[in-house]
Every structure is written in C-alpha cells, then in structure tokens.
Length: 464
Image 1 (cartoon, rainbow, N blue to C red):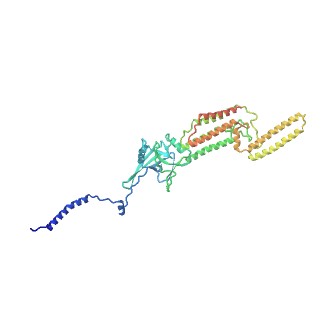
Image 2: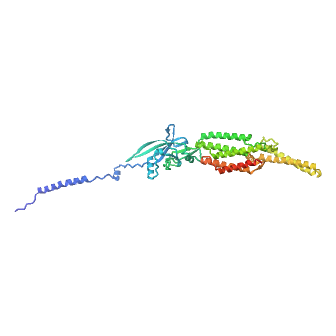
Image 3: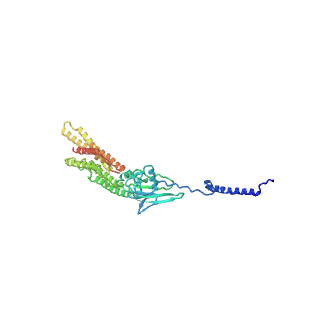
C-alpha cells in the first residue's frame, strides 16, 4: 500500500489555530501592564518646569501703625506714638503660633485674639488688651496652595492699674523718644516673634517704632511755669527776706544772712513740685505723692517753724546790726575792694602811730596809757572789720551763700553742717529714684527719724 503524507492544507489549519489562541493572551498582557509616568528628567527634557511647593509664612508680628482719624495709617516706615494713642499691629498666621504653643505645652487656657496683650521691648503690658481686630486671608500659588492669615489687632496705649508695672519698666530712665520692639503675646509670658526690631538691617528701609516718652509741648509748658516760679523765687530771695534770717546780725554787705531752715523748706518744695510734674508728664498719674514726701515736707516746715519761734523768743541784742560797712556796697565789688584796701592801709598807719605815741608816754601817766590802749583797741577792731569785709567781698556769690547757711555768729557750726549734708544726700536719692523708678521714693521711718533728729538738734542749738 502506498504511504500517505499530510498535505499543505492541514499544516495551514494548525498554524491559524495557534495564532487565534495567542492573540487574546498578548492583548490581555498589554492591557494589564501600567504606563510609567513621566520622570523629572523626562519632564525637564520636554521643557516643562515642576511647580515648587510654597513655604508657609512663619508666625510673626510684621507691621505696626497708628490709628488716627478713624483709619489705620499704612505705608509709613517711621511710626511715632505716645501714651494715649491707638496703634494697630499685623499678626501673621496667629493660629499656627497658637498651635505651636499647644505642641510645646505652653498654650494658655484662653488663647484667642481677644486674649492677647501688647509687648514693648519684651515687657508685657498686662491690661493693654485688643480694642478691635479683623482678619485678611490670601493664598500663595502652588499645588496645593498655601493660605496666609493676617490678623490686624488694635491696642490703646493706656496706663491702667494692671499695666502700671509694665509701663514703669518701659518708661523708666526716660528720654524724649525711644526706639521700641513691638510684639504681642499672652499674659503667661509667651511672646510672638517680631520683625519690628530696632537693630534689624536687611538692606532696605525697615519699619521702626518710636515711643515718645516725654511729650515736648507739655514738657516745654511745664518747664516755663516751673522755671518762671524758680526765677521769681531767686529774685525775691536776693532782694527780700523771703528766706533770710531777720533776727541775725547783718552781713558785711548790709544784708541779713540766708536762713538754713527756710532754705531747706524751699529746697524740698521745688524738688517735690518738679518731681510731681515730671511724673505726670511721663506716666499721666496724678496720685504720686506718698507718706515719705509728706514726712520730708513736714520735717522741713517744722524746722523752719521751730527756728522762727526760737528767734522770736530771743531778745534783740545791741549788736544785731552787725558790722555795717562804711563804704557804698551798691557799687561793683572791685571798687568796694579797692576802697576797703585803702581804708585798711590808713587804719594800719593809725595803729602804728598810736603804738609809737604809747612808747613816748611816761609809765606813771596811767590815764594817758589807758586812753592810748582804748584807742588802739578801737583801731584794731576797725582794722579787723575791714579785713573781714575785704575777704567777704572777694568771695564768689556761692561762697557767701554757703557761709550764711553753715555759719552762726561768724563760726561754722557742726549742727548746721549736719542738716545741710543730710538734706543734700536725700535730695540726690530723691531725684535718682524719680528718674529710675518713675515714683516718689519711699524712705523708711528710721531714715526720716534720723533726719528729724538732725532737725531737732539744729533747732535746739539755736536757743543759745
């Protein structure tokens, strides 16, 4: 039998069935294979730049200004404000700052915008709370966009019971105008970072906040009043008996000497009145007097009153007129000194002549010797008076005044020197405390008692 081989038709049929069975598997694999996304290198090669993700604004105090005439004045680089003004502060991303405090476990119980207080030079002004606030939100480009919140908070620069301590630290050692760091925070001491720092230098004009501590107009007006009163007092002291001792012997220039007790009373009067006005100018507080001030004024008034009673009880002595000058003391001092020099020379020659005449007298002529001795004593007294007057007129004015205050019966006395030094020291301490602490000093009862003992000693020594 003849062997048969498969034909071409049969082979073609087998190949077609294989292709049919392979196609669905290849298509399924193609559908299940993901298409890779474009890489940054491929995107860059295609000329497309990826959008950078924006950085959120850090929480901070960014701008400040003065609220005047019903509007927030903006666009001003140098801000000047004083106590009593209304200012506004722009706070960036306030809620983010509160959230950061919560993460640090420093968030206070009340942490809303209305709970903020103003900070000046990192000093919290408790009681200076927001009087208004409003928010403004804008978005920065990017995917996803970042939102920034600007909260404008208004404050009134008032000094109340709660803020007195803070204001005392801000205003102490006052100058007319002072740069200050402005910020906000909470009463627990948490303060927001501020871009409004006096020493910031970014190469461009930065906003600066200037706090007017001493208002120039009110200060000038007060100085005119106080200086006018002081000038009037000095004129009265020079030409009247307003602080002179009317019962004391006259000075070589014919005037009564200045009274230490009345001078002390005038010293404390002007020091207290100037300090009171200064504190009112800086702090606005009208209740600055305390018991120490009343004690000082009372001691000085009591000293002057006691000295006046003692002087009134003394009999008027025959020599109360003092060593009256025989020259015209209304002329310039150089002319008075020249005339006194001539009188001293003439008197010295008169004394020498009497001494020569005495040598010629007989030792048995007692009457003539006594008369010559009496004349020499009179001449010596006049010569001593001329020398004292010449020395007095040669002194500068301040030295004559100091001699009046410290001398009694032409002798420097310790009880006068003691009360003078204590008054000067307490006066320096008084001024330093007012300037540094913005408050009248509170002297202890022991110190006031010591001053009272000095005053009592002074009055007691005037009895003799």
